[in-house]
Image (cartoon, rainbow, N blue to C red; front, side, top):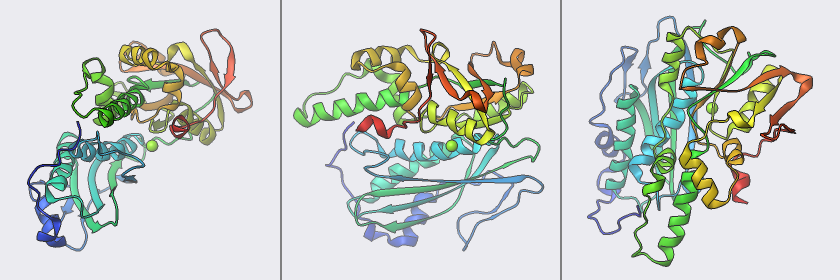
Amino acid sequence: MIEDKNQNKTPLSELGEFGLIDHLTKGFKIKHASTIKGIGDDAAVLDFKNEQIVVTTDMLVEGVHFDLSYMPLKHLGYKAMVVNLSDVYAMNAQASQITVSIAVSNRFPLEALEALYSGIETAANMYDVDVVGGDTTTSTAGLIISITAIGYVNSKEVIYRDGAKPDDLLVVTGDLGAAYMGLQVLEREKEVFKVNPQNQPDLESYTYIIERQLKPEARKDIVKLLKDLDVKPTSMIDISDGLSSEIMHLCKHSNVGCDLYENKIPLDPQVISTCEEFNIDSTTVALNGGEDYELLFTVSQEDFTKIKANPNFSIIGFMKEKSAGMHLITRAETSIPLKAQGWNSFNS
Ligand SMILES: [Mg+2]
């Protein structure tokens, strides 16, 4: 899990900027008819006919968003893609193109960037997107990755944050809190490794939560599933910062309130057992941990029967009038105001 420092390394200066881009992207294939021109000219050319275009950008900074002492570069490339694609799916759109830009210091050899780009290529194939451009440049310290994802959606199908109505059901996909607990385990093992580098960690009982941290997936499947079920959410957002703050975004943009039920929040057994081990409250982790990349949406009560028995969905609350406020209804049936702490507060 820790970087191997003893491999043969090729300094980036051997390739030069143009040689580097060519080298890193040479195996990438164009799959979409909407990609008229990909990498290789001054700009990419795309043609989406009558669809609306969705564009989203994210930047990941070493030491802020990722730690290379336990994040393999291939996983980092994959995760950087997933983080962006998740935002496209949160609009109920299909992702089709990506641009990837990196700033990298000379401590990274060519082989490190090859690993990063192999993760990018794996994700591009997995999620069926074309890499159509990007840039590489030098940074004085550390690695910075900026990805722009482009997608398309029919104007009647796009879903914003602002459409939730009182009485709508609040629904979340998958389970929550695993990526945050995976990070706690990795941070702990990093500290152990510093003290005793011979000590190989036994991570057997944490495989799911570590995978959720190192190799998350975006819910492309949910966009299709909702279509198949003939359900159009009234509002939608992806969970990057934690359930609590995403609920507050939906409420604020839609001018509604919300009751969230603690006993309905979906948790994997590994999250529950790891929370017990770390003596952390699992609800707090689900509310504030973040990096789940699940989708959070609201649907009208009429759609209840279409989603109630589907194992992909958990109905976790319902929307109210704005004046009712935003509350967590605890297992003890007390009502406490929701707060958006985000993941930062955990670190202080
Ligand atoms: Mg988002």
